[in-house]
Image 1 (cartoon, rainbow, N blue to C red):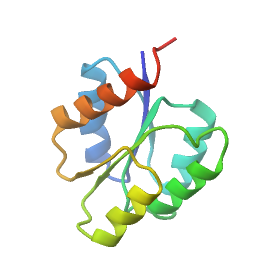
Image 2: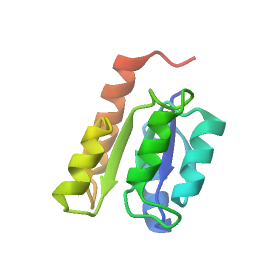
Image 3: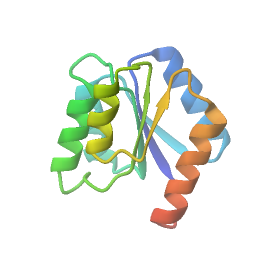
Image 4: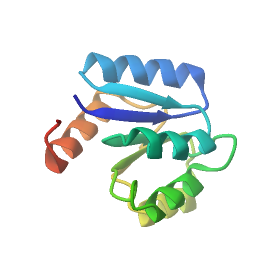
Length: 126
């Protein structure tokens, strides 16, 4: 079973994404702000991360920078799910190597499909 970290400050989004991912067979761990996102990623070693950009405790872009600097997290695929339509934010995320950038409200089937495709290519679960 693949483990997905969902990092979002919206309780509604966390519940929505967690339910959709669990229904597709993923294990889900959660972070509710940018500080937690980095700590949970290092502690739980998820197979992929679903990351909001606008969160308390720092931006998702800063989380991405920290993830990419750490040997433990630098290769974890990240899918950004954001309500931001700012092209600079999208470009910064893409430069930091995100696997995909999806707009909110996210199409849950599309998100699950993106994650499945990424994880099928990356590795087989233990």
